[in-house]
Length: 285
Ligand code: ADP
Ligand code: MG
Image 1: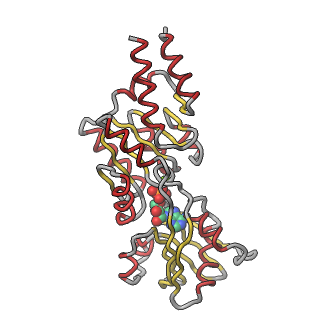
Image 2 (image 1 turned 120 degrees about the vertical axis):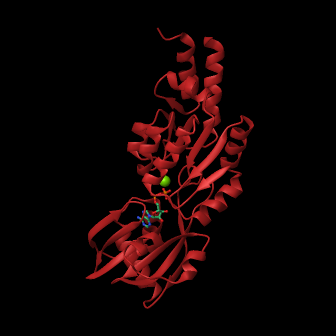
Image 3 (image 1 turned 90 degrees about the horizontal axis):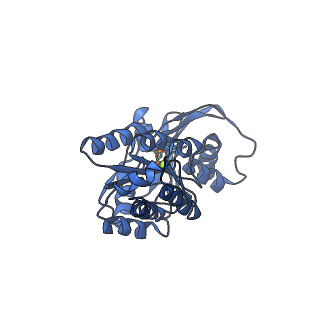
């Protein structure tokens, strides 16, 4: 039989917006020594805004129009930012043969032109050269190619969540190591990690790369909680000792796979979940 304390723990957590899917995870949380987090949507708000448009060989409005028409086919937060920025400019225009290339971006055709919209990795994949200056930008960048030729880029910015710094400080006070993983550029990742005081941060990761990183920490004997929100995060959420999903903005697959769901998306709830586990242990034993 399950001791009464565990029910109390699950109830206490749920009143604080933390959903434990099993009482065993209360105990698991007390033994975590490393918290690995996704960047976008977990530590940052995941609501991007277009900052700057640079077009080459076509006018800015046309670049934005092509980008938005193709990004309409994606649910990625970056795609939503570009569609919102374009407003009514795309009119009724639709993209055809759109393919979403995981960790890269989109490929399709608009108005009889082939269009690529994604990171520099996407352009490299299709052997399309771009100016070296693009690699020096300390922003999330969406690069566009039209008819196999570089056509410019949009810079996009996200904001760090209000309680993210506090969440990292709390974890360090509990002697828990913090790690951030992201598909975004290393330069952007380093900037966020520095602002938050995160111990280790890895960018430019494909979804598979995130799995490999978490596996490497496990192989090193670390006891891992992974916190994520995106569709791509489901495999790592499954792999961690405690898989945690951000429930507000999070994808259904990740929420379903998770052992623990943070309903209001606040990173500070990670330590709250550990706290409830510790309290429950004291009552049970
Ligand atoms: P993350 O959630 O950490 O950003 P993803 O695997 O979802 O990881 O995306 C990795 C990178 O791939 C993004 O940072 C972006 O550069 C690029 N990308 C993914 N989807 C799109 C898209 N629809 N449009 C433009 N770029 C994209
Ligand atoms: Mg994500």
